[in-house]
Length: 487
Image (cartoon, rainbow, N blue to C red; front, side, top):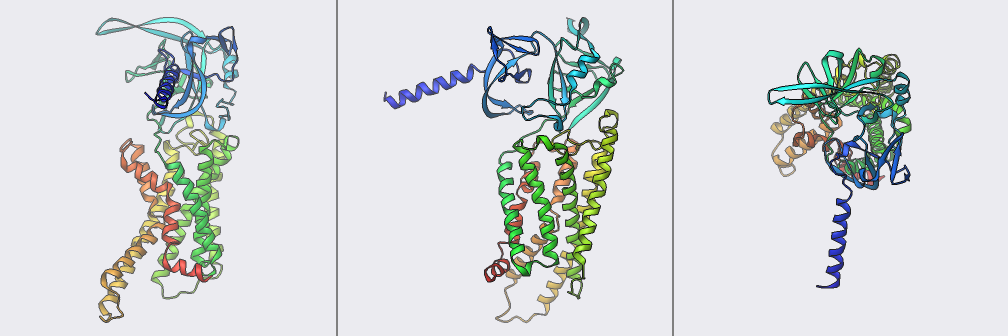
């Protein structure tokens, strides 16, 4: 055997051994915490007064996502801390997550002041048809390990009374009304649980998990570049700075900021301004959809009217309409969060900010009243304007072809159709009709249909690459390239 193959074999075996040594026996990943910043003393690690032996620690070079998949990460030390004491998972709003992963809502101090007592029960299986519950010792808040969890999309908040649940020794919760068992990693407690305990225990049930769709981050980066190039061309070429061009630039600027915020948040650079980012994203999202509606209205009017004169101060009027219309619901949401933002009983009526990522919540009635509903109405309006405009263009072109003389200067029938279809495609995109697919998939996901299917993936990829689509359809066409070369 050659020395190269020998070295390769040694490297492979050592890598496998190193990876296998990272696993902690009989301990799930979600039962571990990162203790890299804690020092080792006498073969143990001390975490909040709890001594963790070295045999319950291991080095990990990956992180496990909520859907069970693994992503590579810097090597770090994790400890299994739920062996000696019961662990309680309490959700942490994304706006309260620090850069080091800790939660800054001060909840542990609140727990220690209230001295919360929970009675853990144990299941005794006497025979296959009988299950008994045995009372275990009570644990107060000073003896429990509190694990902080992130809110996830599709979370369902349940308000359970004392006779509607039983907490088991392993941290699972038995729901009496439905006889459903929620394991330790299927739920977390709402941060404001302790304001109503023991009358009501607010439990966040993991109805679904976040699925990572590959390559979306890279596509979004390319979209950002394409947004910049598209806006640069429209600002550089004077003939493109007409009323339609100004509206397009404003719309693309809102989309660019949305994509930029999403990208920066993806690489964890917006922890300190998460709440501000959430309000900004909502405002920009409403503004971009309003600009699509304005563009649709203007194009419908432009194609059906014989008067090509642009109204004076039209852009100022459109701008005032868009920015004011987007600012009003943003202000209403801000006021509602200041009044009811910490009340779990108002969770479906108040569009909570910064709980699931640096965005508005995506569950409950408030989601449809303030977010999905208005955007769906605007997208439907744009779709109607597109259909009416397309019908008008098709009729005009059909009449032109009917009366046109068939001579050498007339373009072939197929060539005319291709140009018409390309024109329809451009109108479809700049009128914002393509976002209707996103709203439909959101509606379908709310009812837990098509989850994890290729239809959802296609919608995500189209949204991530919207900047690329805009650049190809508006800039990489003959007329725009000719104007750019002449300029």
